[in-house]
Length: 294
Image 1 (tube, rainbow, N blue to C red):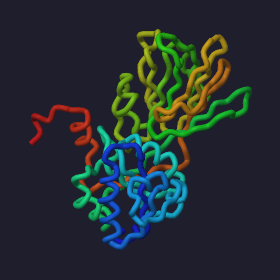
Image 2: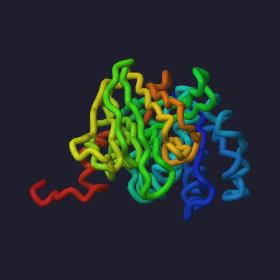
Image 3: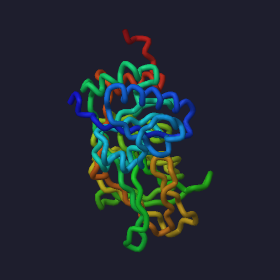
C-alpha cells in the first residue's frame, strides 16, 4: 500500500566495496521523502554523518515496515535468515555479482526505489529450511537456510556414507562427497553447480542433489516442500561431516548422528519492481542466449 512504509531499515555487509556510496544515496532519498530510517549498527562507520538511529538487525526486523538490503545475494541470504521471523518485507539493492535476490542496481535507485515505496511492486514469498543435528535422539545444534543445507565430508577426495529417508520412508544408502538439500531459491546457486534443476521460486518443493555420488545412476530428486528429510551419518564414517547453511559452516555432525531438515514456519517476503521476471533474471545472470528474443 502507498505510504505504508513509514519506518525503513537499511542493512548490509560493511566490507563490500562501494556500499558507502549506495547507503548515502538511499539515506538521502528516504530522508527527503520523510521516512524514518534505522541503519544497521555495523554500517554506521560507512556513513558516520548520517544522523540516523543505529540498531541491531533483530531490532530493525521487529520495528521496520520495510527493510532494504544493500549488497549482493550473500547479503540478502544473511539478512533473510534474521528478518523472515519478523514477517517484514524486504527489498534488495544489488552491489554484488549475480543478484537473483537483489535486483535493483545502483543506477536504478533514484527511479525504482520511490516507485516501490509508492506501492508499485510485485510481492514474492520464499520459504526457508530449518536444519537440526540429532545425537542419541536429542537435538544438539540448529541452523536455518534460504538457499540450501549441505552435508559433506569436509575433506577433498573423501566420501561419506549416508542413509536418506523422506517422511520416514527409506530412500537409499549412498557413498558420495555429500548431499545438497535446496529450496527453489537455492536452485540457481550451489545446487545448480552440482547438476540440480532450476526451479521456479513459486514452487513448493525441495531438491536433493548428490555430490559426486559413487553410483552413476544417482540423480537429483525433487520432493514436496513439506517433506521431512533425514540424513543419517553412518557409524562407519571416519570424518565429522560439516553441515553448512547458505555456505556458512554452522554445525558439525559425528558418525551416528542424524541431520533433520524441514521447512521453516516463517517465510521471507521479497518485493520486486513491477514487471520483475525470474526468466529474465536467468537470461541475464546465467547468460542464457537471448538472440531470438525481440
